[in-house]
Image (cartoon, rainbow, N blue to C red; front, top):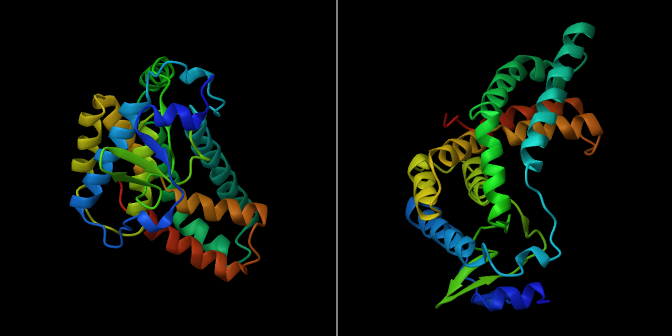
Amino acid sequence: MDSLKDYLEKRNIIISPNQTERILQTNYNEYNILEQIDLICNFHNRVKDGEGIYLLRLQSNIGKEMEECKVNIKRLRKMLLDIEKEGIKDAFESELLSSGHQILLKAEACVKYIGETEYIELIKRSMRSNELSLVSCENTNLWRRENYICISDTSKLCFNMVEWDCITYLSKIKRRGIHIDYGKVIESFVQKSALDKISEAYIKAMVSYPYDYMKVCSRKREGKKKWSAEEYGEKLSAAKLKDGYCLI
């Protein structure tokens, strides 16, 4: 059985931790984002449906992200209900009660944007094609060298819908406050990946999900950061802005 390294090299994909050959991207614009999207699609096309791919000892994350989104919605709803029942105790809870209901509606709209039947069909397609997701698709981890694709870190490589590489990549860019035509970029990914309108709708919805806001709520609930209530409130307010506008 081929190792992961062998499997990738047969498809002109090289694991190359050598940082000196990377051309790091410092200024994002629509042109170089579209170029990276093209490279992500090229990577997917080289690795999918490969002989023996199912023998690779990789984790399957198919459906995992959506379930995490749904769980975070339930937890946010409970936090809001608890505050409404017991009253505001600090600056964090004040900010949460002020903005949380709006964020909750946004998150619910994102996970419900495509129907359950359509979502299951996306999962089935991904499983049939043995699709791989690199997860980290920025040019610090994925770049082109002549006819080769170079990857620095494959530790997050897993079986998953190809849509999630686009979602993860664009979500990071969006949270940096970079303004581009996200609809155009998503459409390019869908066309180059031979996907359909359901995938396009799914990507738009998931890029719109309030990940940063949910992350701050999770940290507060689990006590992962030793921030004061005021600091948590400020982080929550900043997260709302970082998550940005909705594409759906």
